[in-house]
Length: 375
Image (cartoon, rainbow, N blue to C red; front, side):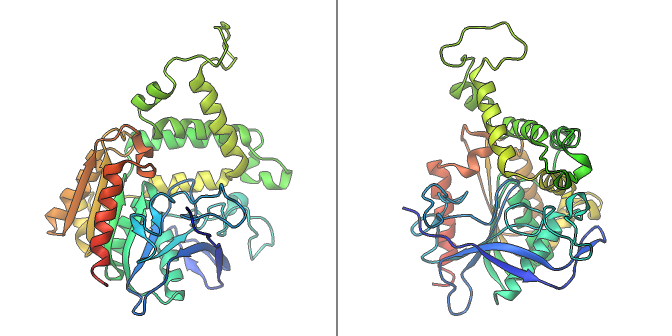
């Protein structure tokens, strides 16, 4: 049974200088909190979201029984991240399309919709914005920062940007940077969007249209990379759509996997913003803490002081276990305390969102150990 979640918003009139040299002011961050902050404010856990998620991490909205948060199986009363013990904070990143200031909002200087003029944001910029929100909430040190995929990159970046403001980093199904193959997938998805005739150079809002065709294709490409070959074969195989024979057509939807991908693409194009997709995939591409340290990850992670849990999944070929092991090695080179689990799960990259018993047990055990620090 899920609890009732309440979305909140905080306004920041002051300027936030971005990594690119650009800046943004008069912005809002959407966020949600679950549980109760204890007297010495030592039980706070920040949850960082991945590409198409938001601040709505757990619970449901009142009167909307099917509005579960994207990590509702992980976070809540009695769940692995137990909100009876932890004060959990979910923040929607700048540039997203779920409540925080993004490309569909008004530029305070021009009075026009940002559109393509919204500044490029990075993982480091998101972390700085999150830190400002925590300042407003009066939280100086986090018990943990938790994230999967792109959220895991933010958790890792927290350990470098604010090493003294956190005690634990939980990095799930993530990587120290993207491989060339991953950047390539992102670029093909972006090309699908920007070449859609309805994109209008990113200012499609002015034309009253949405580049849905590009968004559909972008989502289809992404969704293929989130699933493993085994899951696709088990779920769909070569099955044709129900009651259908081969049509010998190059354009009809005949296979069930085709129908599934079209459905995912259609659904995504109804709620996600095209400029946001471009911004977030670029942030993924740019993340590389070792770049400023002669590409030496050990040197890059020397600033980290937190204790770490890293989790990877054997069939995740987009953020493979090898990438997590690179982080583990660099941390061990720096004599940091690291726990690492490589879970044999069939679900591909999406495994970090699913109910694998070993994974859930591991997370519960680790957060139980964190809770003992302030019990």
